Length: 101
Image (cartoon, rainbow, N blue to C red; front, side, top):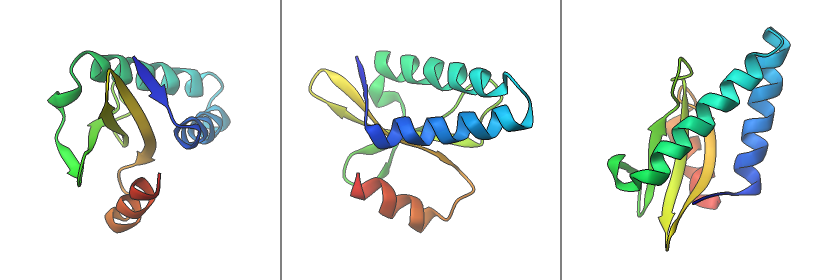
């Protein structure tokens, strides 16, 4: 079961709005790709590497939206989606943001 932090939901909403501004319907395709990615993570949460210590993993979004990473933590019986961020952002900024959540 995947649980989304409100901040991760907000990340997704901002990106959906951006893509819809580029082309109507593209935001829905982005969200479907992220949802598909999270569903895969939910079945095999340890398949992705730990990228931010001590326990935050990252998987790249599916279906042509690979510029975005889904950051998550494995918790007791669930996957906690922490953030959805563009992978070209400053790695130090990403690390700081994710650790704050």
